[in-house]
Length: 100
Image (cartoon, rainbow, N blue to C red; front, side):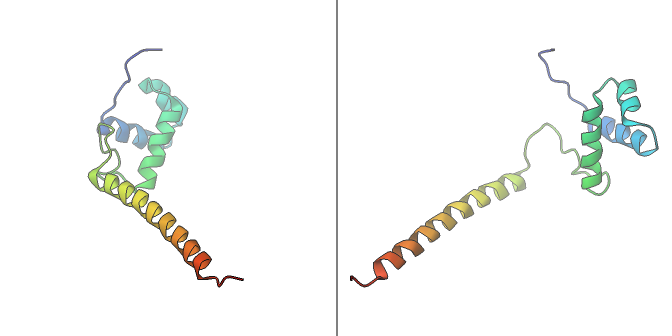
């Protein structure tokens, strides 16, 4: 295996997907372009999932967008707060019991 990871431009990916959408098989297009067919199918799923070739389809350089980072941070925080709330509910119920 080669040590360096190949990078493809957004335009290259969109053009490859367009060739598949025109009716060519993904395997044939991938072979002609010198890429793996599973990679091309993944790109096609990304384009179809984003409803067309918007600017958000292939954002670039593998970095997560700031909004996505914020969503992840908030989800982690929500999970923690939910666990704390559940624990406090159980503790309150335990201490609210009258001694027998």
